[in-house]
Image 1 (tube, one colour):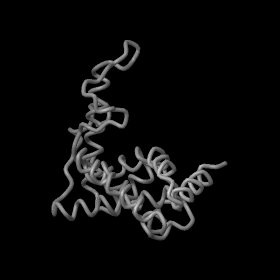
Image 2 (tube, one colour):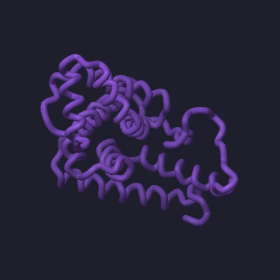
Image 3 (cartoon, rainbow, N blue to C red):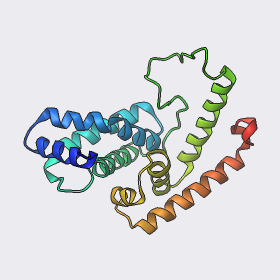
Length: 197
């Protein structure tokens, strides 16, 4: 069974009232949804709130899901929850340099003996911070397209479905967003690790 078939079966079970099936969908997509919310909002607490709102909304409206990709559907809900949060705040997103996809929130970073040197970890963190700041500088539609394509690794068709745009518009947003991000990083070369200036 493909992941789409598995998702559709879990959705069907959820629509029939099976809470365990919906919880399985949450387990499958919570990291991706959180990552999208985090990068759109730029803060851990706001991303957690938007992620929770997205899954509550999905659970509440699961009967409205008909066919297609559940992943695209939940990502669209997550994007809308993030934009709602931004509107509620009435301000631009904040940038947090503490987010790490591999971080379990436990605090200290444990570096194995065979792992990268502390300098390499610092350089990676500096680069991540520069890219995160650059992402936050993009227009919302470009930021979302770049995040979905380059960080979430979604196909153009899925991004078009999530953003409710044409594939041509998606490609244009990605291209313009990437160009603006490159420009941002070049203008702020001091934010980049020395090897990348």
